[in-house]
Image 1 (cartoon, rainbow, N blue to C red):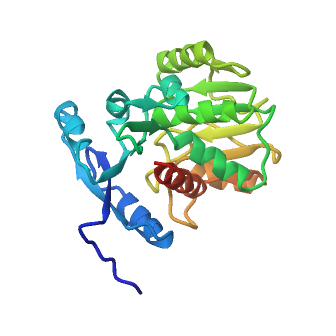
Image 2 (cartoon, one colour; image 1 turned 135 degrees about the horizontal axis):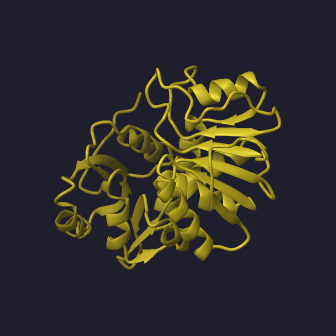
Length: 268
């Protein structure tokens, strides 16, 4: 087993959040960098949420910092700090990755949705002209809705415990996108082809279903953003598997997201 060597030439990447102890990105991405021959490390950076607007602009001035991952609650702050932002981030209102380009400008993108769609497509599943239901209208839900629409989904029902939140997101996405209709909805699994849990329900081992679904049609695709250990599916994924559905797990999404983000970082 090789030993990581850090020198004065090693490039620096980070992940910012509050809290930060729970993240696994440092080991995942530092190992990935080593695999592709990139002399770089990714380290956790804990910034107090009350100090983010003062700290982030200063952090971005570090000459050997080439990129940042962004987790809760700083995805909107990072969007404001970027010089160039991918159009989908404007639609979502958040970013989760920044990279420094050759001219020293900071470019931003959002990969929560991209990761999920890559995980889905990697299984040979088809999304074009499908109808979807997305549970949870926070940053992950918004990103997944946008990426599904960009991949060809034509109708997306948005559901959240806060009805005003789902209605606001539907209005926001309808005003900025074409080719897909977004509607605020109750958690109804009928008449949809793809069901995605983008809420936090399922993070705890004892969590139940994110909505009162009793069963699914075996032709439906069921996905969950919650990252659970292999062999310990969320209640939603377990039920979908019992019904013979194709499933996209948090592991599938995470894998797709890692590949997309490493490509993004390398393009700088």
